[in-house]
Image (tube, rainbow, N blue to C red; front, side):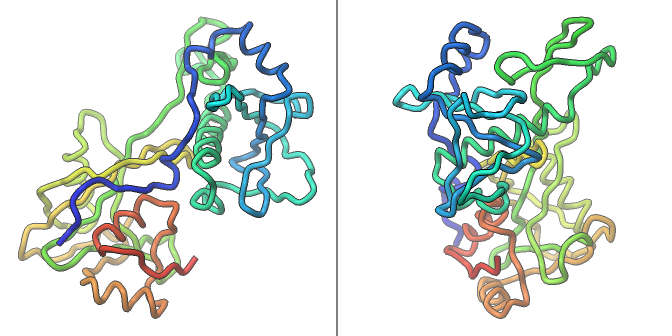
Length: 299
């Protein structure tokens, strides 16, 4: 039986700060807060920041932060403000650069939320430097949460692409598939982007049928987490396959797929014949929810 309820722990769906959206256009407050030595600044470069071995994020006081685009991330319960600056990483003894894939699952709730938000904002700013309406340059505004066209004044907001990720199962088995881009032993659940004018449940059914030729029903939502690599929101589902169907992989996105019982899944992961997604991913949480506990980790 599958345990009822939503997913309980998702590595990148954590956070411990108030995002204080009402302060993003308050220039006087932003100036005072940046000048406050209690404020903390993390530097982000191409999706990475400095971390200490615990692991824990490295923060600088504002006066030591390098020049670069600033993003207000939020304020904690002690009224300490946190910012990110997009700039080359400074040299800090006892630290090393790391990204979400490497450390996201091991960071504290506060640090995981901060790094996820900072990476998402930086990725969006780096790829939206020009106005989609007239092609002119845009500039950051609202403490890094919008961009404004320098010619027509139009305001543009960060983009998030919804993507469904679904564990397909029947009474005793679950389905895993492998992509051409992955190592030979790596398999995961199916996923795909939501198309215009499509509901989430329709996207689940369409993607499963397109990729492995299976019709599904009883699509049940379990949880979501941001995936800012570069700008997705992963929406997790269980979907039940109709009986008596044969797998038919598309050969393009999917190179192979197979059904696993719980015993087969455990044996394959323990032997190393099957590599599962890392614990940072919602895919891993869906698999372990269906299995009923933790599985061996090869990463």
